[in-house]
Length: 222
Length: 252
Figure 1: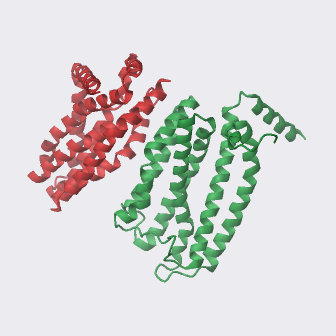
Figure 2 (figure 1 turned 90 degrees about the horizontal axis):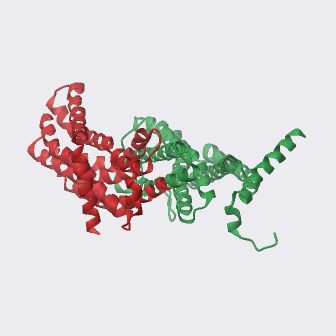
Figure 3 (figure 1 turned 135 degrees about the vertical axis):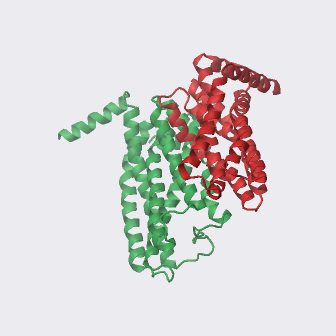
């Protein structure tokens, strides 16, 4: 069971490494969107400190969205996905592997670069640590929930726009608790409660979402 | 009917189409009766609220619309589950037929809430837990309709839409309990099975209006389902027979 997951992760990572431009462009999208906000709203540190959690999280949602259509589309186009569906292993495990690989190439880089962007917004060290932790904890849920949307819109015309319409409403809880954790730290309340809920969302979505996406993939492959 | 009564008989569009046609006038009539009675009680009989004045009367639309927006989503998810489990044609059609009504109810609930919020809270909109989750519910309805509209193959559209409905159903309990979990601006529920914090006439007015909305939703959903049936089964003999009958009736 673990073997199928790790081999899918290894395969997807290898494919991603061959097309590094995709990873880099998603990260730069994140950096650019976040950097646009101080230009738009002015450089007052007090204002920026208040806005930072929300801005960083919304940018992280959008950056994750950007790479979702490719989660299954390439494999669908060259027929690999059908072979994976035919394999004796449950499709849910294959999807779990793909979700983890997607997080490693899209969520993890965001978490690594977020503290640097947080400094631009004049966040304190505590807030930076919580921000990084929250993005680390929350982005796997984004990949998991996003996989459902990617599977549902597989091969449809206008898939990208439709995908954001389906997935963004489901991302809202992650956004609320992720930004809430940083907010609570900035205001001195402590973000543990928000972080626990975020972890709960992540584990629940990593547990259930792959199976829902597997069902959606089977519908798409019929 | 020679064989014994069998509910599954109506799982087929051929038998459900005339049944729905026969039921629609009843639901329309019930909706009008409940609506008139509810409006009479709500607008003329129910006393003025000592805190909120006459403005509170918008709850006679707002509360039933909110209830229906959540309930219709649950019904759609129920149909989706039946459709995915038993692979029935009718369930996808019913979910499809209910979606616009559900979206309308969610929109009505938000809109009347805004109209009520301006005089009471002094703001059209606040980012309160219940308002936000009702907004998400509206987005879910829109997402469902967009997804099913984007898929040309109706069978795939039904299944994919059904899966989305089942994923989104997590939101309904969140809306329902949001007032209890997060103690925010939106007031708690005033209706309770054991004791109610509102006057008897107000409560009855609201329940009658809820029945009116309920009957309206069923009637409209059945009408829409009939149209969907005709559209999807247009190549079958029974649809041709129905259409031939209708055009004959029109010619007379």
